[in-house]
Length: 600
Image 1 (cartoon, rainbow, N blue to C red):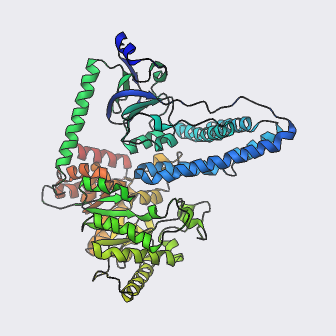
Image 2: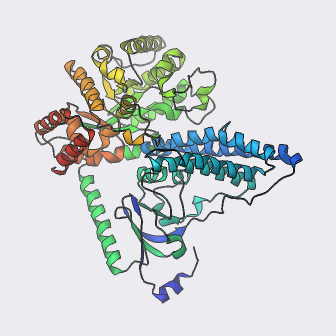
Image 3: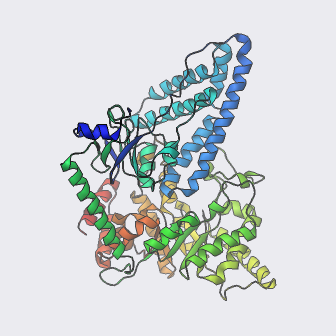
């Protein structure tokens, strides 16, 4: 990108240049552009003398260790990102860490150093290209998935080469407030460092709609267009621009017509926001008077202002993992009490559902890794995690129960158990819960007259099918649709080869949800949905039609979900749900959902 004085550009009166691209994140931005340049992460081919091989291997080991540290630091940022961004980036970073360990990339790079007398940089680049070539030669229809896997190998190789050559990474701190960021390529790691309140929009030369970066930008809510060929060569730092992430273009030196359209688009966005803001004090009530409880999921306490601003009626899922992540020691009871107290008092009497620690499987917490026997194995998601792990280490559960009980008198509190699969797990947890409560009473701790309800998450097919039995032990259900869909369909949506099979509208998933909901309703027991389905306005008619009256979601989704609720009639929803449940084709179900929502 070339630099030129703004006055000179204005004097020339440059004509508008429009660069079409792939619309990946909706929204409009009118601002000057700012280029994000980065020195190439490559090094010239270099041979070494045979006696230098050990020194080169040592350099490679040092670069790999430093790269792992960099990726580890990036993981610490995940806790402040939206849930969707965390779910997208966490598996990718875990894959990066694996590739920076005793992986094929590093093993063969070390071999190339000795056998081919290559420098560490050259060996890494050659091996990365060899692996990428094998990946791309794999037969299959998912070409985009293969391209992503090859890209990930090359990305790790670039990081290693940068550290081997001491080439600096680009810094996002220098981007001016309110600028449109343009660059040749934005990696998912770069996207994780963007601040939505600081960046007006993003446009790149490379990238596609289904890549990790696109998903990250959508999760962060930053207007973005990828694949704008020729943009970086044509743009000069400070050029005025209009970016439309919905229409999929960026215009440099926009003309009067483009500026007017952008102004109209921004005005429409502002009006929509104003209209949704007016819903805040209104109840989430259907046209026939049925109340629906709209609560928020909470990742970290910093989200509390967003939850208050959205008008949430409570917290339907407080994930307590934030207390345990990115630290070398476990939080003691007092630290947990302090964190829970802040949340409960902030909600001023509105219900707070606290889920006890859900660790294990794919989740990595350094503080717990010391001495806690977690099954890694080939299928960690099927191993020791959630309530299984806590019952194996009851001292962790006892301390967390004690902290929750000590704040329970400050407001309405519920306790949620993760990954329940059999009634016995709830019964064992309740025994510990009541034992801890008795111990606190003996210490003179003020507790509510009635202990907080103890609920079970329904997030596996086994739990859904045993819901009638689990309901006899639990006080309430929370259906976690994300994991329920994953376990039902045997699909990890972060795995490119099978991500297209992940579909929460699959009949099997819906039938399990229906079974669990009906089991709870038969006992007049509260039941809610706290997965991503709850925050999709188009799915609200189906959820209400299945009998659900409590939804917990990201705070930003509450206004539009409330808007949908207030446009619905429960009898219409029930008839619609019956029609959906008669279907066997997920595509047909999706079409019915779109059709019903469009009529509202």
